[in-house]
Length: 106
Picture (cartoon, helix red, strand yellow):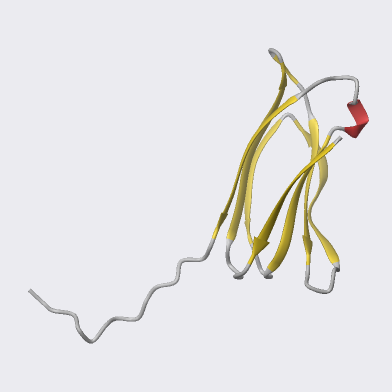
């Protein structure tokens, strides 16, 4: 079974961050996780290769605008029910505004 979160990123230098854990009752289990990028032409690039985790926290700074997909994969262990708890954020870059001519000094 696959579970995916799709993010559309408009600006380079955005941050994508995740935090997840997997459990079955009181037992920790693992799940496959990877991150991929798809550009406007449909070409896919692997950002984070598939690996199995019990839990993970991570982030990266985007160097391309486009679609990012975070993928959790439990297809290798379909007999075991698992609970995935996750948080995903996409934080746009901070853009400082130029100083205004209307500033008043006090």
